[in-house]
Length: 164
Image 1 (tube, rainbow, N blue to C red):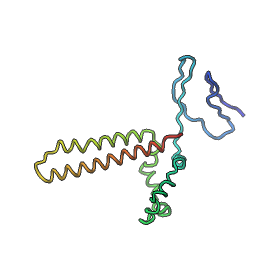
Image 2 (tube, helix red, strand yellow):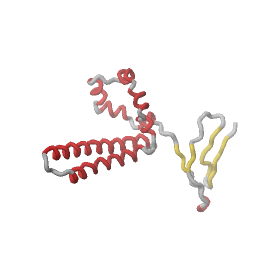
Image 3 (cartoon, one colour):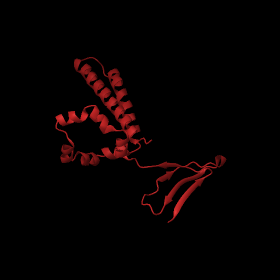
Image 4 (cartoon, rainbow, N blue to C red):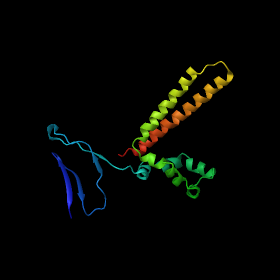
């Protein structure tokens, strides 16, 4: 049995035995010589279901009454399985996006853009006709709702991706 040990001035950083089947995490970073210190950053894959379990999201959804409300509308786990919702979500990249580290930032940028769209649209579109005012109201409402939803999704995905 062989083992690989990476050491810094303070002791071993990582021990990996050849007998285990787990691959080494990818290592990014730089090794510097500032006061004999070593800076090594590791990136580990995001385990979505583990985070859902750690955050107790299903228990919180149950306590909030979301699961019983979904069943009243005919949406149960067996219905989700029959409809192939998870395979469609993966086909459209929703599940992959939840594990992509760039997703929270992209959602946050989208939310800020949408939240700024409403006031700019109201400022730029004249109010000469009633249909223009109605258009201002519709675009403003959509930008506020969309921006708020994107902001909430950004926070949710960020919480899912953070590991303690």
